[in-house]
Image (cartoon, rainbow, N blue to C red; front, side, top):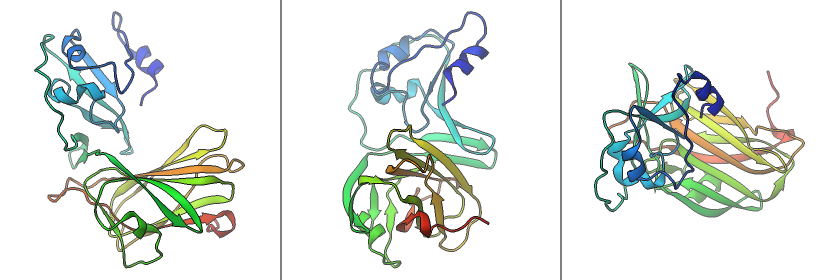
Amino acid sequence: MPEPKGIEYELPPGRKLVYWPYPSGLGCDTIASIPRPAVLIWNFREAHPSAGAADCADLAPGQVYASTEGYPVFAAAPLLGEPSTPPPSAAPSAAPTPLRWNLGMHDLFTIVSGPRRTATATLAGEMLEITYSALDGGSIENLFDGNRETLIRGESDNPFVLELRFPKPRPELAAVSLHFASMETFVVKITAERSDAEPATVEKAFVGLTGEPVLEFEVPGDRARPVNAVRFEILDRRATPGEGYHLHLRGVELKNSEETAAPD
């Protein structure tokens, strides 16, 4: 998200920035009554500006805006015309609502976010708590079985989310390797939670990879502080496939400091 101070600095005289807490506080009635013209801005990972706006998505049709490097920055919806009366509340749809992410004439993607799943799995003798996007092939345990013939397939989420939470802090963890199956052009965002520190995040973009790449990601943040959890968000940057987005991932490997590759 842009820094609020930066937004306020660029506002013309007479305009102001108003904050609403997510997930509540900004329902259909409020959106319909906001004086026009206005712009709603929210986290690009959310399909709607608030949970209360899910039943009236047509009032604030969102688009994800990206940096010049192609990374998503924020979602926004212009509010034009006159304030209106919202439609009667309807039961929310079980299907995730997509946001369009337009990065240029030749780059049109979809951000799709559905409910997360949780499970436990054993890796290197530890029982990990796993949070992940829904699957329609394989099981989450396949990532940790050491068998390169098995894999998981994401059901539809883009980005696909995978979070590993450790039963106790890992002071020696330096990197995590992901074994992909046929990923070509994508962005990986890695967030690490370390003891007594704010979460640290880095992003890496990949273009035109072939085969089944095995990629090693350094765990961001202060290495003097042990790691409590690592979260991956894997964004497929291809134009929306006809069958939808289906991440294919074969395995995950944790690497301690002495096991990581030396820099070139």
